Image (cartoon, rainbow, N blue to C red):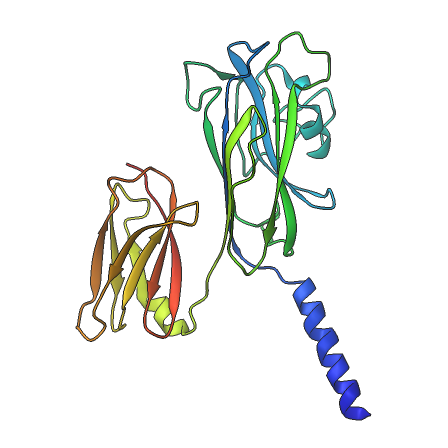
Length: 276
């Protein structure tokens, strides 16, 4: 009877630990906001934010609203402001990109373009949030004749934050298309000694990335893009006394990449940004 009780307590403890897991990692959210077929002027108001699946607001990641702060009412309320005012002075934008109304044909970024949002899996206090289902919300407005407050469009996309990597390409919902969500957990090396002996530079890189690995029998290096695709793979002879490897990514797009450095027994992952 005692052994069964201990087993049950162990199972309950393990289940509780699973429910309260807080996996460190990165979510890369990419989407294209095409120009709407009708009623579209030269500008767009755009907000992107992270929520837990139960509706709990986590963090603002983007807000372009100019003087028309009443046209992002859902974002404004959920971020702690009022429906008629999504101004940056009312909302914590410390981990978000923000600016005036996006314009077609001028500025950077521009209206009706492709955007990439990166979330570090943390809330505004810098704490890694609990694992589970989360949503990336997009709210947009482009019609100057809208009521007050009112938007033209809102949608959301769900992904799972946890210890397992996830790459999603949801069905397009016009005017939002070419959507991808890539959750990449921060992989821990099975041998912490290996982790501390690997270094990558420069980061950000203008195209050439140098991987240094002293006294480690590295057998393979993979470069993975935000869609989870291997864009470059290098096989090495671990018996050689090689201590570094250069990787040329000059022909690839500017964005976040994950570098997997592997031996025959273990691997570690590192984030690098290409900025040519």
